[in-house]
Amino acid sequence: AAALTMAALSARRISSKTHGLAVGALGLTVLLPIAVFARPLGLGPDQRQVFNAVAWLRNEGVINRPIFATNPWFSYILGFAEDPTVHKGPRLLSAMPAGTIVVWDSSYSDNDFHGISLDELTGDAYYAQLKTFGGIDGRSWELRVFEKIAATPVSDAPGRIYPPNLMATGVETASTYYRVMPE
Image 1 (cartoon, helix red, strand yellow):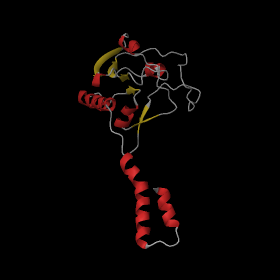
Image 2 (cartoon, rainbow, N blue to C red):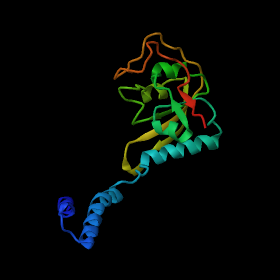
Image 3 (cartoon, one colour):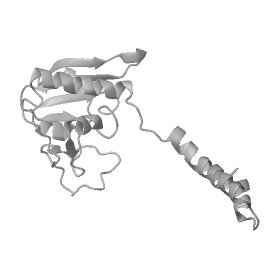
Image 4 (cartoon, one colour):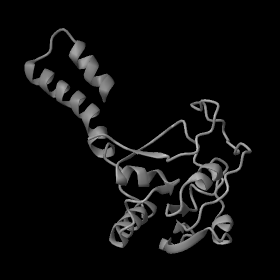
């Protein structure tokens, strides 16, 4: 349709009515796919559960504590900016203070990059499980909220980082991962 429209527009003798129809057809050819396909993505069931978890944290009054979460939706919902030079792995988690809220989820936490195993949290006396979200739509995705109840020893060994963090400064930071975004 676009080729025919361009051919009609390039013809030397064309009536104004035909010209208007050709321009209209060309405009529809361009705009119709945008109108049909270009729209915001909706929230999936996993993202809705993160919203539910954040609402629960607010209701429990623990939202102002340090939060360690590997799921990027937490930083989006809470308005945090993630420091790209810091690796969210076991070493950073062990450096977080007692009282930290730790959010583990099956999509992001226990993977090659973050390496936060659920067994390490559930089998460790340093963490108490507060709430579980998930098991939705017959899927095995879940999100678990823990509280770090005691300080943990920080290993001197560098954490496993896969793929390598190209933003790293050479020294792994062991401090708060999130920063509040300026308004």
